[in-house]
Amino acid sequence: MQSFQHITADPDILGGKPCLKGTRISVELVMEWVASGATPDVIVAKYPHLSKEAVQEAIRNATDL
Image 1 (cartoon, rainbow, N blue to C red):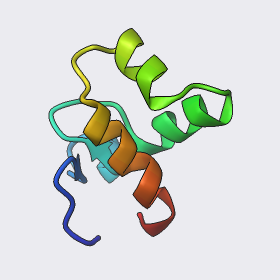
Image 2: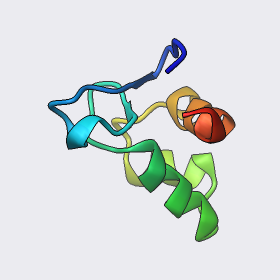
Image 3: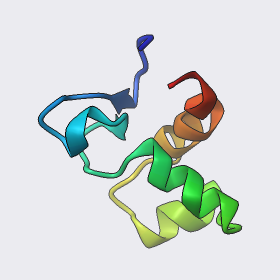
């Protein structure tokens, strides 16, 4: 996996799935939210501990992970 500022993969967290750093929110889950119509602003409003930049990085790079 290439280096990302807001995404990490740790074998001890969610079985090594790429996640937003410091959370147990996977990139896969972010993409499910986007597929259901959520925008980065909506996601951050619902989960204020996430940064918009982290959500956008997950969306931008989901196919590379």
